[in-house]
Length: 223
Ligand code: SF4
Image (cartoon, rainbow, N blue to C red; front, side, top):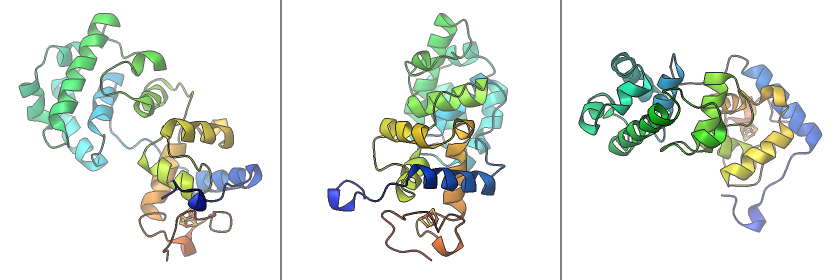
């Protein structure tokens, strides 16, 4: 944990942050967004479904979903029972389905069926927070104005000394000050790839490409 002052952890210097980020970007060059989609409409639906649900589960159900629901109007004209037939394998399926329908009703009414490309408009949609708004801007529109902060980013940013905060908005601000802007678009996916491969529940520090720099904040056991 990183709440107590005695366990605040160590922050990396700017120089070491730059080295660590470069080394990770080099090691995970192919890292990219993990949900399948073709259109901004697909992406918004998949992103809402993905909260607290494994990517594999979302990617397994979306081909049929995307085939049935192609436009904002398709979702807006649906209802809970119909949508649940396609998404009931995800956690909190009812809430997410309601959010998807409500979000696309707004998009259909207010934005002429087009998923907005402005962050302040996205975060007003049901089921869309800062992280998902950043994700949609980056992956649907190539607009990079922030770094999506998910659970992997929260966990690894602390371990690596890139941020000692636990509030996602503050973590994003810390990262935006330390990660070169050219890496903002994929930094969350690089951290996720590293977390899944090396820096998981029991980090494999002995095999880690950044083990000479990383302060290993909060790590009590590693291999
Ligand atoms: S595996 Fe260990 S050294 Fe590597 S980033 Fe994680 S905590 Fe740091």
